[in-house]
Image (cartoon, rainbow, N blue to C red; front, side, top):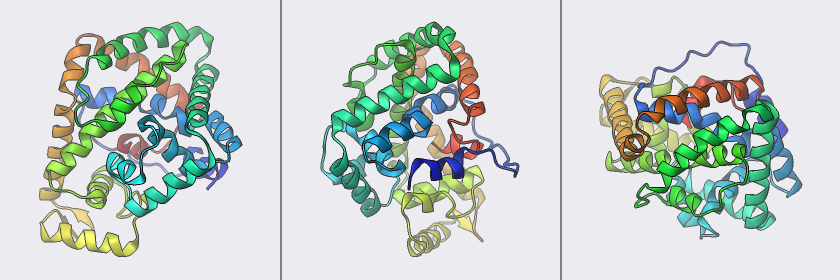
Length: 302
């Protein structure tokens, strides 16, 4: 699927009002949600769409190969393990397709240029020093984090940091995103979930319809039916919705994910509120420019 098709589906404002999901307002969650639109300019921005298309990549293989490239050029099973929340065969094929079309160096370079161009275009040159200031605080804290059990975070942290303030903020935001994502995968595994049940619990918790989010990650209707039967047997679901047991379970996973961010939150200390305030204003500008999905559930889901 090409970028223009994706943009028409996700980036154009919807005529239908979508309720904003109610999620915890912990420091870790506030940080993650404030930075999410910034972190994802390497695939959602039109500059990224154009640059990756010039390499012969569509939206999805550009997204998968772009994120996986921080790991080097691993076998597909390693990418499946690191990403966690996609159907394994679907993800492996998408990764191999992307890797067959464009080199790692080219993908890394074009994603970086696209993200910097997007932020500069939307925010304006006058905000680069502001971006650099919060990026510096974030990067200092992120360099001190333990990388054990965090493959995507650790791979990304080994890459050179971009040279300008917007690029530095993008990299810092990406690192926060991958740090939390790795932690979330660990929390889900510890709760006994597989890739599809992770998705189903999250989509229902955030207000998506059953299968609305998980189907975009390559899972078939038959697999979804089997997952629902499994979750119903545990008492987590009933009649296509989460039960009190299911909601409590998903909130426990959220709390465990936040716990995985405790060291980062502590390292940021009193600077966290300042970073969130600045990042939220920048992210609001990105949403207004339609370089990030307008659906608030998508922002909360990551």
